[in-house]
Image (cartoon, rainbow, N blue to C red; front, side, top):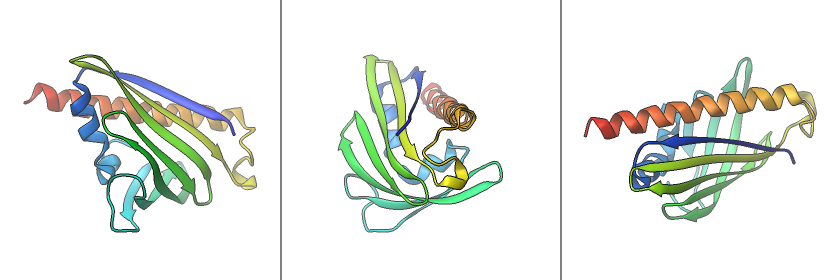
Length: 150
């Protein structure tokens, strides 16, 4: 499975960044490709949480079925993708100092044949990297603006 990895530096304490990303439903506020998130079980945080994310990039719309498979408080959220697109993803936070946090987003995905199959398409990879890097810019702005207004 091909690896896609994007990263950003957020000028905020790790706790503020963590609090922003553990609210799964709010991901639509900073992920341009996430249209809506609907929990499919009773959990909304932690390992075992399941949800459907309605996703759209350009003309391509799909439901991304996800389950949280890893949860390390203040550090990592890992998911498995079980819909039309399968694979795994992970958010990792690293505190650089009390007011600076690195946020890394990694994905290993397998796409259906009509979307490039096992993702041999370097153009598709570049598109996803661009979208996800923009998402991280959105997240950084959201958190940094929130920190400066508190």
